[in-house]
Image (cartoon, rainbow over all chains, first blue to last red; front, side, top):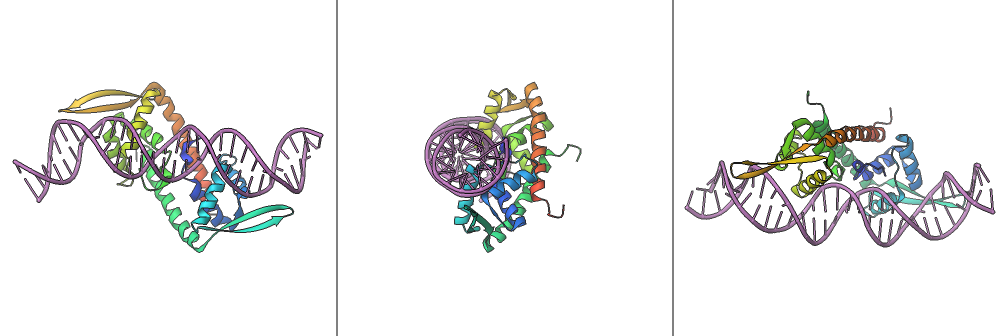
Length: 110
Length: 110
DNA sequence: TAATTATACCTAACTTTCTTAGGTATAATT
DNA sequence: AATTATACCTAAGAAAGTTAGGTATAATTA
């Protein structure tokens, strides 16, 4: 996804957040949106993305609708009811994570 | 380290930062300091810590001095010259990481 | 004083998460 | 005509951490 190992473990909350903000998206679109939002910094690899989407669907966090755009298929993902519930917890976990990082990395003066 | 997968990949920069701030520390002390700073949220497991410390020493990022406190040994780690250089880059990577996360997770209003 | 907890180091098997490197196929651009 | 972009997918391997052990001394608690 990015050369840095820091992003490890962040892909799931990122996807959940993007779907929360954008209603429904297909896989390729998610990679583009992430790149766009981060000005090219965040490159979600397909080898990480698709298996994760499949897992989240299996877990009942996401649901899918397949549509065709011209002759190409698009598999749209959106948050289920359980997924929306999960998205709140996911967001809270991220907040806690960021707070803890700031406690470690803030200048000593604080 | 923490139940959340978010911390995956953060351990190395965390250790480097703690050593940057505290001069020199031994392994057990690092786990305590992390717990203290984050009010118990961040529990660095020894199974993750020690192998990482060994790797960083091998890579020339850290150097060690063994001292005895009473009859117990302590292996103190500190940043080498290369480690201090690395700590700057490590910090910059973290900043970029946090910026990108904020671009994804900030409210849509921004 | 015996048992437990805290301090202090360590490793090995396993799991989770992501990368790398493929594969298929259509549409648009060069 | 060849390349790039769109759009899906998988499988082998690497990287990072968890879990569950092991050794040993010092302090506390029952």
